[in-house]
Structures are given as structure tokens and as C-alpha cells.
Length: 551
Ligand code: NOJ
Image (cartoon, rainbow, N blue to C red; front, side):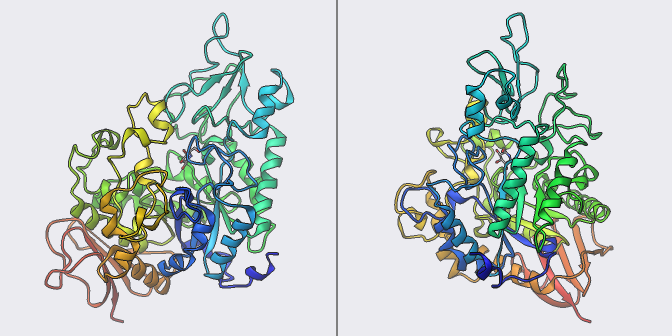
């Protein structure tokens, strides 16, 4: 079945992932083909030529599996099927074939830390008694306190509140995220074996790689008594591998087994860890060739638009990538954070959740500044050695939809924090394809999250027609990046003011970014792209350029 499309537009390079531009699709918000308001797989297939026109090397597809959507699809009912609202396995094969035909690889999201509470194994666990084999696939414990009415430990969920929920017979189960996402017990051989089968299932169908959700959380120290964490906040992890829940040294035994399976394929399947490791050296452990091979580096995504911060992050991560043998990864936006065109238009240090609670009004967002910086940051990122992960809609310069009415919010964070944080829906609003069709061409019916009126001029069709648009800018940058790609190194060019970052890649490809108010002279050579207009031939504030030096 798959033989045909294995031989189509793909480069045979087994190392394709090392410097790939990967475009993340959040499938329920990309394109709706069947008028139910939810994006789906045939909707993506129909946009294959759009994806090809972007000039990306790969798509990362967020979860498309059957799910009650308690957490945007990261609550998986069945790891080897497609949500019927999104299509069928045949639709998946059709999407993969269309992408491969367009020369685009496909990375699927795999969610091994937890299943959904509708997964057949969890249903079996609930029906089985305490101590049974069915309960051993998850993490069930008796409660504490005289009558067991208190949770087994003080561990907290990422989405707020205790990480334990009690079931009818009095036992409790662990969920690092929402109660609908029970954590697997990775000490259980059946769990380990089953996921190897899932990796083979998708690899046999022809997928090129996996994005591994919560890779840093899978191995846990469950020895009794359960230990408190040094800091209860699940976002903070010590850097010595001894935390009971996160970034434990023993997690790498799991990924060594995975790597053996991924290497059974030709080319070996790629994998990238979503590992919130506390330091770059700890992150590098996930990225070893004997492990997953690559790990997300979220440092830029968490940074303010500041030259010193950007410079340090780049230098540190390139040095660490060198140690592990992996290539670096770079990310500015994803389905989990406020879009970078909005972040950069807000004062540094702003609390994004408080800003969202104000409906995006306090403090006010400066969209001109935000977009100029976002385009400059993107151009800077795309010049770096390693792979860049882009999030759907950033190529349109979309801003966060900060004023979604409370009644439409879907993110479990909203309820779990007692409505103190609105969560991540504002970056997950369905894409605008045209300005003049209902629902901006995303669907013919009301989308699952409402789109704001200002999406119109930012739609694909509007920007197609405008050579200065953000969409055309992304296309040009991504095409040039393919041509200019060189060895995975850079040299810093000194002699500028501290608010200018300037480096050169082998082959004389210069990247210059101006974070400061004074204009900067460009090096001699051909200016192949700029993120905004030059002023009298110089690079103004919040602007970046690529220059090919005269040889
Ligand atoms: C990380 C995913 O990116 C996020 O969207 C999800 O909520 C958590 N993992 C839990 O699966």
C-alpha cells in the first residue's frame, strides 16, 4: 500500500530532520472539509499545495486520535486510530501520501505519559479491583489519612489542583494533567511493549517521525512512601535527575528501547522530545543518537525580545547540541503559548494569563511593534543551524485572540484553576483562509472557537495578493533557507553595539538583527531578504536581514 508514495518527492537524506523547517498543524483548527466546525484530515490534505508553497520540509501533526477533547486531543482514547470527527485511517494514508508527494515529511504526536480516561485499559482498570493487573498499567494508590480520604501524596497537576483523583472504591489514580488524563505506569512491561507496537504501527504506515509529549514525565519514582518534590510547582525541576516525577535519569532507558525500534526503519524514524528539562545539558540527554535524537528547546519561546537573552540562548544551545551530536531545535510559537506577534507587542515581564483575563486590554498590545519583532525574530531563528518549528498561523502574522468569551473556552486550565487562567485557546482559533467567505473559509459552519473580525485582512487569500505580506515573507525566507543551508555552525561577528546580533554561516550568509533604536549599516553583499523595510539602506529598529557577502 505504501510503496508508491515512499518513492515520491522526498529527499532520500536520512538526516533530513537535522535542519528542517517543521510546521505544526493543530488539526482541529486548520481546515474543515465536512462542515462540522472542526478541522479534519481531509481538510489538511486539500491544503497540501498551500503547505508546499510555504517551503517547509515537514509537518508535525498534533494529536488526531479518538478523544473526548478534555485536553485538545492530548487525551487519547486509542493510539492506533483516527478521531471519527477528523476522518479515518484511509484519510490519514491519503494525507501522508499527499504530503510525501509534495516533498513534505510527516511527524505525528505521540502521547505516552497518559492516556484518556476513555482508553480501554483505563476502563478495565476502573472495573477491576485494587491490586489487579489492570490497575498496574496506571498508577493507583490508597489514600492517606485515617480513612484514606486524602490523596496519596502532595503532587500537583500541571493544570492546577491535586494530581490525584479518587475512584468509587476509595483508591486514587495519578494524573499529572487533567483527571481525564490518567498517567501510565512505565514500570509495567505491558505498557512499554504496547507503545513499541504503536511506534511500529505508524512507522509501518510511513510516518517519518514522532513528537513525544511530556517525555520528561514518563519515568517516576513510585517507591513507598511517595516522596514530596523539592518544589511543588510542576514547572520547576531540579537539575540532578532525582526528582520523583520529572526528568529522571531512568527515563532514558525507555527511549533507548524506542530508538532500537525507530532504527529498524529505513530511513530511521526521527523523534523529538517535548522535555521540559531544567538545563540545556539535561535536555541534551534526550537528544542523544541512542535516545530520541532531538529535543525541543523552548528557550527562545520563553525569552523576551532582548539581544543579550537571544544571544546567550543561541550560544548555549549550539554548544549543547554539539555535545549530544543532535542538531538544535528552535521554537517561537506553539499551541501552548501566547502567539509571538502578541508577546512581543506587550511590555517585557507581563503576566500573559492576567493579560488574557483582561480580554487583551490591560496592558494594551502594540501590534505594529509586535509584528515587526515577530518577523525579525523569525528571520533570526530561520538563520540558525538546526531545525525550526513553526506553528500554524504564525506565517500569517496572527496575533493571540485574547478576548475569547469565557463561555467558549475549552482549555481545562480554565476550570482547573478556578477560572483564574484562561489557558491556551487564544492561539488555537481556526485559521482564516479568505476574507470574504463565511468563517473566513475555514468551515461553512460556526467553528469550534469563534474567529475575530480582524482575521479578514490576515487571511491567506488577502496575503497571497500582497508582496509585502507576512505570508510572502515567510515563503521567501523558507525558500532562501533551503538554498542557503550550510554546515551546522555559525561565527559571531563582533564590533556592533550590544543591541545588534550578527553572525555568519559558512558560505558567507550573514544574519543581522537590530534590537535597538539606532539604525545599523549592513555588510557588503546582496541583501536577500529583510523582515521589514530598510531606511536609507540601513537596518532600522526591530528588523532583521540576511546578506550574502561578496566573495
Ligand atoms: C504538552 C502538550 O503540548 C500540551 O498541549 C498538553 O496539554 C500536555 N502536554 C499534556 O499532554
